[in-house]
Length: 510
Image (cartoon, rainbow, N blue to C red; front, side):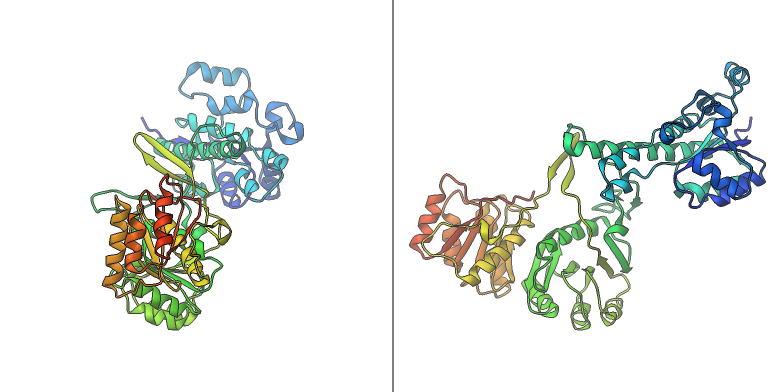
């Protein structure tokens, strides 16, 4: 027995009429009886196409300012009846309920209304009741009804009814039911999350409508996916598709450069989510060259990001380096021409949008959610713990190092001098190991640490770190403080003319 069903009737009730006209005309051409409400009904009439008002079916007007239009047994009976169920078919006849084979609904734009900064009353009015109910009913009864629940599906639906002369297969209807429940679940999640901004009910709901399959995950044997709207974040101008690892590095780069958004020209190079080079300079070319000098070995295959436009001179310098991704707020035409010289090099223009203020990651059989670390250490946060106070240049380097330290894997130590990253120790199980790693790395690239500043993402439980740093040439230290043995580190610094400041804020990054 064929699962194809010939559509004879359709209910259309949409908020936005964009893209609807060709569907209405095709349904009319196919001889489909069209039922509609309010503004949609007028739209169809204005096309010169016959339409039956839902009020004529229900014998009940739209009431409460349009809040109640389709919520009626004659509407939902027409959608939810089982056409192979003798009792249902008899009841349709008994109560003069029209069979509805197609339901086309476009919900009130709740999320757009929230994003627009509208009043709470306007937002509440954009919580769709009738539309969401129609979607759920039609999707539930996919055996007999096809539900078109989004403008994004208009083209596919039109293609189906055109190619199949008004018939739909069970496979078509089930696919559109899945799409419909995606729409309804996303809509409900958005409403819940709006209310939960103040209520703080301990429930976790995330819904992303856009997704893409990646070539693979962290490694070729792992599947990988990205869910989110990349187009809101970047304009991709050139290069291959972003990989799973690219995306993680791009995320790290964007978050780090966010610390330098309004600073002088700053360039950063990242590898495996950590900065291997950062510098702030009078020009972006100088910033790039000094960032590269921080670790030219790790920079190979890295992610490059600037806080200001990349010009032709800088692009020419970048072009000689193999790098995966270049990110900037803009590029000169000449710079783009140069950078596009490598076929696979990914070039992104970063847009100025607000990023989420929470972070989410899987953990055991659930998820961990936390506020993002949005605290940036500034001059006003500092407490001066030692007799020797940092100079003006040392203070600049301390705060510069602190910004990088916050975005580097814990345990971490960061060295900076003259607004340039000299070296960092990253992801070590011991802070002393992180410190020694940073010293060795600085030496390997011929950095003179005498007069450099050191940042630590957490306090020193013993004075060994400040002692090792002092002997390497460090003259100023920034750390959160808070150890019961802070005084031991302070005493060492006082005895050896090292300036140390506390921020009061730990910046672990696990």
